[in-house]
Image 1 (cartoon, rainbow, N blue to C red):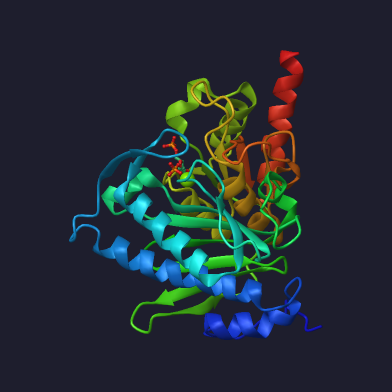
Image 2 (cartoon, rainbow, N blue to C red):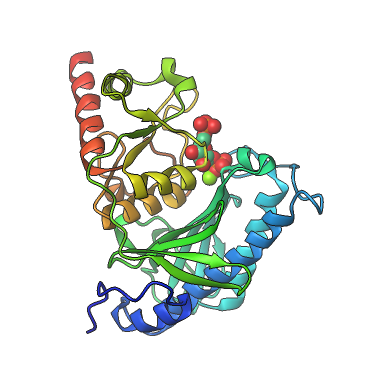
Length: 336
Ligand code: AHM
Ligand code: MG
């Protein structure tokens, strides 16, 4: 088998990259390659809608609520339709779990893959031209093909992911993904309509100086999180919080840093969703040498019991996440 960590040259087109790695993918039948292509293509379509949103009256609230009772934006709804349609047509997916849909969507019973997706994350930033993202996780189904999908297929722990990634719609649009053999980033060239390899085998610095947390909620954070923030302040670290998970994570992946969304008074289980926010970024972080925890457990080991389950989330540079975990655990001991 080809050593899939051998770097492809910068500038390699996404399609070519996927093809060259195909033999190293789990099961290597070409289905996962096709699925990644479908996601990348939908990302181009969504990218186009985002860029034109202000012009064609797409910005703003849709007047409906998502699975978590949060206001849906027009672009949330549109992105959900675009990705779902592409995954349905592509034929490689047996079930979709989407932030925008209350239930598991059954697609092609004969297919082998389950996709968990947040079609457009960072809703509060859509209307103000700030970076937003698509987050996706891919699992191999557990039940037999041809049979109806089961909840066991949907509710798999993050360690079972066969691929995970995001599309960042930022100052440039990027697709960053892993199939369990390193993390690679592709920048979209809109003039050619193609993604090209721009970031090879990405590594998260072990230590960083950036902490990303919504400090407006400081007073309702657990004591250990307050202690960690204090620690960062004393060390003179930089606070950077966009409020778009993908953008905050991406910056920390490149520069070194930690992103925290802990439990708060209004969100006792945290705000972020385990299946299509935390697990995805946890796999990418670990593949890049970083770490992800809920403060006690490794994110990838949590077995979900509900598809829209939330989890407190600490992700980023290994040393920083370890320190945060240490202080959270210490504070819990003192409280006991
Ligand atoms: P969303 O899925 O409704 O967009 O919520 C997720 C977003 C993350 O992108 C971001 O990190 C976080 O919520 C920001 O939340 P807050 O405004 O509470 O800081
Ligand atoms: Mg989200």
